[in-house]
Length: 58
Image (cartoon, rainbow, N blue to C red; front, side, top):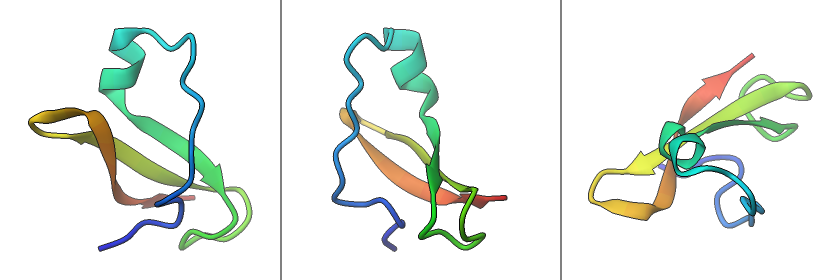
């Protein structure tokens, strides 16, 4: 399943390893909750350089 921000780039310059391991709740207008909603992305197990969409929150 594809998330609303898949294929877009996110500049994580300056993020700590801990912050990168936590994943991110990214603002998006394209998610299930429209403008102001967030798309959740977490690390792919076994591939620490890649995140995958895990759902949307308001």
